[in-house]
Amino acid sequence: MWTYDLDAVWAGLQAAYADLAADVERHHGLRLTRVGSLGISAMMHGYLAFNAAGELLVPFRTWQNTMTAEAATELTGLFQHNIPQRWSIAHLYQAILRGEDHVGDIDYLATLAAYVHHVLTGERNLGVGDASGMFPIDVATGSYDAAMVAQFDELVADRGYGWKLADILPTVLPAGARAGMLSAEGALLLDPTGELQAGVPVAPAEGDAGTGMVATNSVARRTANVSAGTSIFAMVVLEGPLAKLHEEIDLVTTPAGDLVAMAHCNNGTIDLSAWVGLFGEVGRALGAEFDTNQLFETLYRSALEADSDGGGMLAYNYLAGEHVTGLEAGRPMFVRTPSSTFSLANFMRTHLFASLGALRVGMDVLLRDEGVGLDSMFAHGGLFKTKGVAQGFLAAAMDTPVSVGEVAGEGGAWGMALLASYLGSRPRSPSGCRPRCSPTPRSTRSSRLRPTWRASTSSWSATAPAWSWRGPPSRPSDVGDPGEGRKNRPVADSGRSC
Image: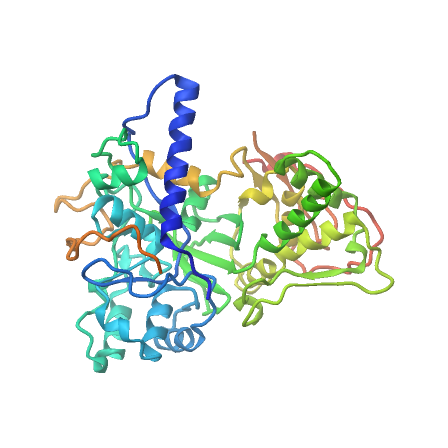
């Protein structure tokens, strides 16, 4: 099972804050004791279930687990709304189907961001974008779909649990809403030195997909972004609902609550990074001196010298199961024939395209089958730190011009900083609630959860076939014959910069 020890979460947060404080002192000569606002971003989905005492009931089940197929299929049929295996509601219902003893004791069901936010503030709420990966959202109300909530409660009514679904889910909040204040306990958790003061306003916590949209300014309709990391996914802001239910596509929201089609693939760059790490070991064994950025840039740039067919080699980057292509468990592979041109350039080209392959399947559903309109696509994540390489490969794989900003490698952290700066900007309605939030937010019923449980821009474009870059495509098409013998070079598209 894919899991993480939550002690590692707090160690990572403390290290990140310490680095931030040191950076402020180094550049400004100031000891950081108070910040204007802050927010938490983390991986979406998954299953963190707590009892009324704030104790973790089972180890954290992350989004990477593909063990909820039975539940996801049944709920998709019941709701007539795609429920992927990684969604929190799929994990909850699978635990119910398995008869797991802990389910009756659940007092709070959270994502990783919702958990951290609660520990820091004592509040049980969550940004709408992250919440939309727990349970379907009604974009008209900005909260969980009430009809589907009722359907789920009826489905499990005979189980005798002491909770209703709405009781255990976080309250949904939109971007700009005040989601709590940093408590004294929370401040000490972030900064064990005790210098950080409590009372900092905190924005609604969000998932990495939502903060990626904000980081790339892809929150308007007909815009899209691609985030590449351990997983890889594309977020397309829709003009309206899709015509059909597609199991390859999640329907989630922006941090403001607008409808988004998400083509999510469990396997992103983790296999590619493993190969880069292996080459780094070889270099160091030979006595070479280089830093990690130099290693990645050298290897990525070599792919630009590759044959258009990657030398006739294939790679499958599935370390985890991949629902988009129907693979239940991870089986990474690299294969070649005796006649393949086995060179470093071809090897890197093959693995760069492999990291984008499943994403192309999902995007074909949106762009070709559904005819979704798309004016721009932006990319972010560590894959795009080497300028002009992965950006060009993504443009080729998607048959769509792709732009990358100067903060491409910052991803969700930058997006969450923007959301935190936006905090408090939404006007209050006459009732005192902010627009599109739940009208009667639930107060914290359990004790605060304990933190120590164990358990400049550029743009590139691509044409079809996707193995060469020559300018914007006149129409979508499938990947052409990879056997063309040309070398490929991306060509700048000055009309599509962000």
